[in-house]
Length: 151
Image 1: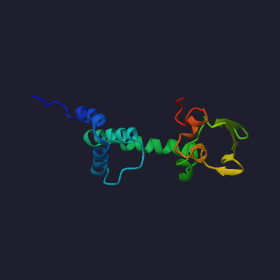
Image 2 (image 1 turned 120 degrees about the horizontal axis):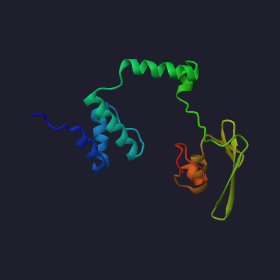
Image 3 (image 1 turned 180 degrees about the horizontal axis):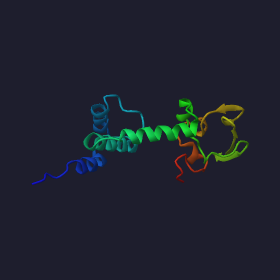
Image 4 (image 1 turned 90 degrees about the vertical axis):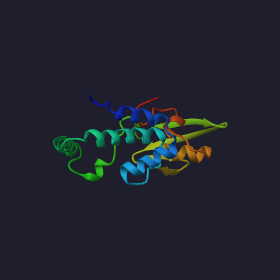
């Protein structure tokens, strides 16, 4: 008689596991400190890792193929590989306007980031934080699609 596969139940339990316990699972499964990302990220990476350890990871041929595809895209430049092309980014010169507490805020898209009040910024989130004093997703703050393509 076959035993039921415990992995689906373990994956389902991630949704209701307290965050400190998710972080401990991360330490156990990855042998490193968990990254400072949101809970959803931890859940998805833990789910992948649990399945990878139980069922096996990518086949070596798949890894080689992905590496070849990456080299075709970036010419073998590993530095470029870490930079994600952001097709949803507004074109250089675009002005983003947002009214915050009665004051109009204007951000200009530059070739390598953004400019607000004459200062360069790498991200819209940094500008939103400077304007509001709290953490914001910059794409959401300025009413744009966020970088994952959702609205």
